[in-house]
Image (cartoon, rainbow, N blue to C red):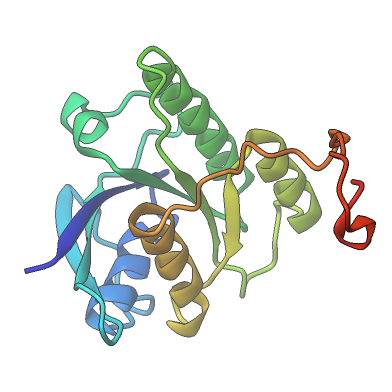
Amino acid sequence: MGRAMRVVVVGGKKVGKTAILRQVACVEDVTNKPYEPTIEDTYQVLLEEPDKAREILILHDTAGVSNYGPIELKKAYVQAADAFVLVYSSADYESFNRVDLLKKWIDRQFGKDKKEVPIVVLANMRDRPATVDSAFAHSWAAREKVKLFEVTAKDRQSLVDFIHYVGHRHFHPTKESKFSLSKKLKSEKSSNPAILMDF
């Protein structure tokens, strides 16, 4: 059957969450259709590579968070999430502010359990005039330790990288080495000094 991961996709209203997911999962461009608010929906994306088990991303599309008031997600989303994708429109600065608040809210929820849940941020609508400066957004992402992708729901190819990143991060995590090159190794006496290395 394969392995599965649950990805919760959140962001403000009208930032293109559903358009992104429909483009990724269904290869359907809905950006020119009239806006319809999403209540909840689920999409699946299959990642297949030769000689590897099938990997399935279950993407949970959520209703847009309000532009005002406190940020809070349903408890079921928080409990089920293996990763979060936060979406804002690069043409709407307030949607970026909501993503910042969402990121901080998620950190508080998982900080209690010391559980690390990957967070990816999508700057959607890169094809429109931007009100959120790209350099500013990347600086924020580096400070918050999240991966930022600049995408447009109109172009499926711009969305492929974030899907692969999320899947790879979950299914094929890289473990950090406990070996530090900054420490100087003590060399042992050897009869062959040519193979000794000093870091």
